[in-house]
Length: 312
Image (cartoon, rainbow, N blue to C red; front, side, top):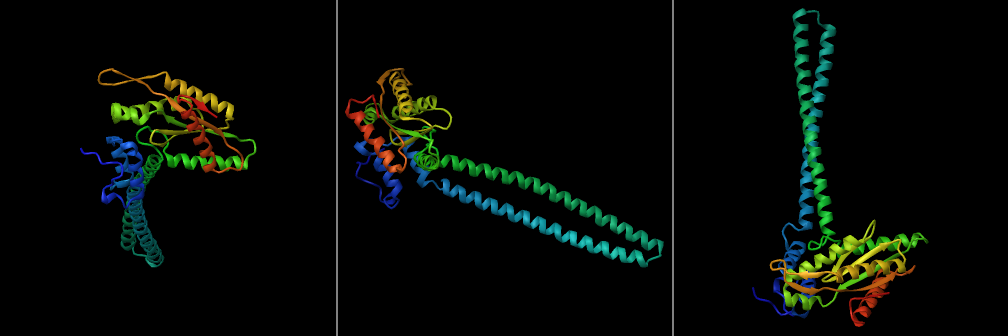
């Protein structure tokens, strides 16, 4: 498989800005694309059954099911109207008929009509139970699609979209409640591109998963960890002061630094992975860009100071 230089894009992809942005971001520094990277981009942007297409399919299936239910109900309503008319006719016949055989025939006809009506009602009841199950399944499909659209497929953490939505909610809640504080960590894996180039993307992907596992183990409650982009991660800590957030960040840094990455196939040691972290506390009245910008500045201050450190 040939590798394109970082400034080249297939002509068919250049008209899709998000695809171009993703690929260019991954190719920064002439880093090769991994299979996981290609699968993620294809699933997110190019797959014929991507999230939007799958939502459209669920919508079509739901519309078909609703139409089927409406048709069933309309059919039973028509039958009920016919049955009611038959009852009215029978009532009039009984009022003026004195013939025993005629009355017997009329009663038999009513019994048959009633039995048929009961059977149609049972058929409708069964059909409605089946439709409820179908609709429940479709609702689960929609929820699964929603979750997938907010989840990074490689690390199973929240993706950037989920992070941005949650950050907006945190800012709104903080604006409405003077007692709530929250903090943000921006985390970057030190020398990750060099690590990828030296050991390959499969090992690089495993490093990303390793950090994701440490983040999950370090967080609790309503804390949100997200893959912000490439080798950069973001953590939102609700109801957390700067002092407490620094402790969380230091625990994450130490836990990652304490691990030696090994090649699964041979057990060979590939060395230590470290992270740099910028920590900020939300300032009332600021927007998401300001908050992230401050965290980003501190993150790169940590890198300039020698990496494997926390700055706040």
